[in-house]
Length: 297
Image (cartoon, rainbow, N blue to C red; front, side, top):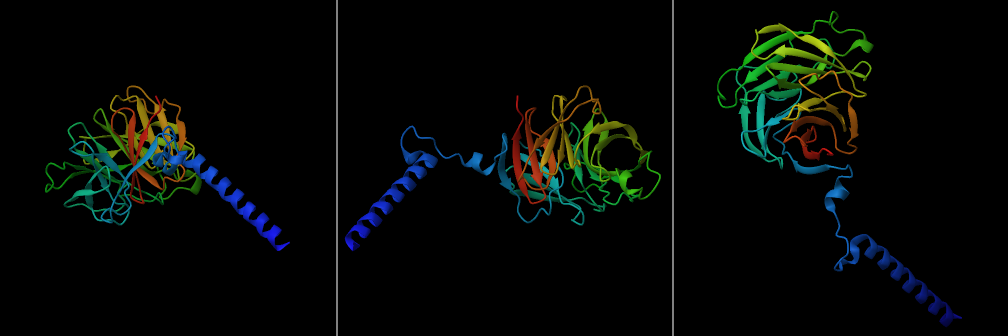
């Protein structure tokens, strides 16, 4: 009996090992010619078109805005609420090129970067979590003149009468902006109902105090954290937390669009976005990750 039991046990172990080896060969392609190689990018990034390309070091605390840098593959970013009033020039892999302290300004709650064709940056100190701020400001900063104190635009919303308004009406937080045709466009984060993004316009070269012009609304089922416009002006990208809303637009008519939602599960708290060409979007997160997203064509 002992001999028979030992023989049966040996046969069971051999069968189990063979099955295990066959399963592993099926997953890895067996390392044989013609076998399918393991695609690390696909495994690490299950979202079609999304690839993690870098990670920022500890210098950047909670990246919250993104703009193109002076050289290909470089980007400007900045920290979130409570960080130093500093811009950081990074490479696409997240490594730091240099820090640019912005002189003579405060960092109450920097949330976005807009950029004009000359490379001038418009820093949006307009984060407004509680919808009660009365010191909303855009700083116009030229990184080619890093020691010059930037010009500021203090602004208000024409439709805000209470500070803060009722909870369902709290749609005066702004974490997204872009430059287009001489204007700074602001896109709100709907903290009240998470259903509507309001669009306002400021005059980029206008007076130091302005009342933003309300242009309309976009139906967005989420809270917008950044905005970017493709170079050809045909695609408006509205970023949310682990989601992206792609909006076909024309001639700066940003409110006349129907967004298409793209989920980005596992990407982290996505906060910064900028186009690198018409079909490639670079995205940064508060956790310091940098992603490249290829739009389906």
